Length: 574
Ligand SMILES: Nc1ncnc2c1ncn2[C@@H]1O[C@H](COP(=O)(O)OP(=O)(O)O)[C@@H](O)[C@H]1O
Ligand SMILES: [Mg+2]
Image: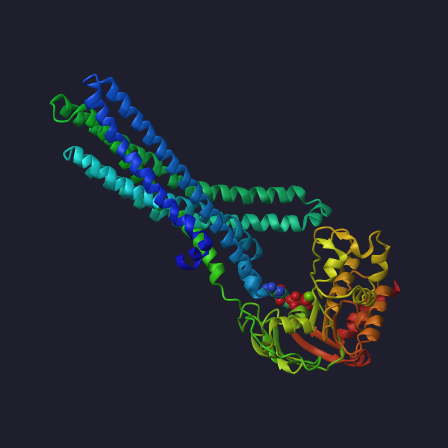
């Protein structure tokens, strides 16, 4: 786990290694300063040698400056290394997520992935910075200060034998309890981010339904859960500070008491005693730092684990090198069953057998939740069938390189998005090298050309983020044009004209018949009128295909189809 994550320090390894080295310089200075001070007191002040005091004083200032210099360089290096590490790690996570299939994204949820890329990486970055600065500094300081203290007076050093176990025991208890609390805290963060994301994406709906007050209340509850989890976790960590300080000041009191008595009896020089106290402070300080380091380690471990989960997640759909390309636009389902949960008892599609000929136009009708979307998603391999085979253009979808397959199967998603940028830039997502003529032709087929030309800037009109400044129906038509630009063999429209008026809908279908005669077209729709003139219509119910046929055949044979038709006719007549 550590190796996978920390390999992303990458080119910042240099700084990560140099930083502890400069820290050694800092520590050496800090540890020798008390020695100089002891000399000043015992040899200078006691004997009234002002020039000696001044000389040694200057040396001490020089050493302090040098220590400051090393310290500053180390701080800079460690900051550079930690930030570079965070940058690399975020990059790696982002690249990984780009390789995820829909199933992988379902598993983590978008919100959790966001927290992992932001908060968790920041946690790890801070821990890493602290680690490079403290992991060397504290042990070196501890050892050298202890050596110095023992060499000054071994008897006084016995005090540490009491202080260290108390401190160690306390830290151990804190660490063992803290980890689960921090894990819980991060989960609450996930929930909060999910809430923020959902609300901001749907802010227009929230306003349209005047749900602001309700949303505010819900969000307050979310943030309050985060606060509670945070307090619960930090409460434990906060305890470590007073315990450490108690140990430190208790030790100093004990040393002042015993050392003071020794000094009165002449067992230790005054200067030695005061430098001994400085060493005590250094020793306990480095112990404190070490404990903090352990605690930091625990806090960041939860984040580390969450990052590792993403990095080590196997994409459920793996791309492969393959020269295979589709021979035609045919699609076959061979006994296909599909579950979103990889569970044969919880199927979204069960035992589908279906052959679609190249160039055929297929309509799909069925109630919401009847698995229309689930069925067509298997064709461009957005999900993999749990059982059975999906054959496209004469080959199993698993034999294609994903790029090749998805270039030949264009799917206009039910929940589609445009990105910020101009209309033309959005259209070029379909085909980067499309010429202006091809773009215009695709837009004409999708009945988008006319309204685009009505914008003052035409194809160069800037779409706001997510395409806010076009209507729902206009957005759908741009999405269709974008898919057409791929010049696919198979095009799937998943309820893609739901927001388009019936007249435009019918001209789109007419254009499709004329311009895309050789392209297999699969149209999922709510309106019977959208699929009526298809070569064949599939009726779906509850994850199964119940009927297949032309409009006239289905009117005879399918009760579901007739019901839908009747209800829509009635709507149209009124
Ligand atoms: N990402 C998903 N994870 C789990 N279940 C899903 C997911 N998407 C859809 N479903 C479920 O699969 C069933 C079929 O959904 P879908 O294919 O979207 O229906 P339709 O497109 O016909 O309205 C529904 O019961 C729905 O709740
Ligand atoms: Mg659907």
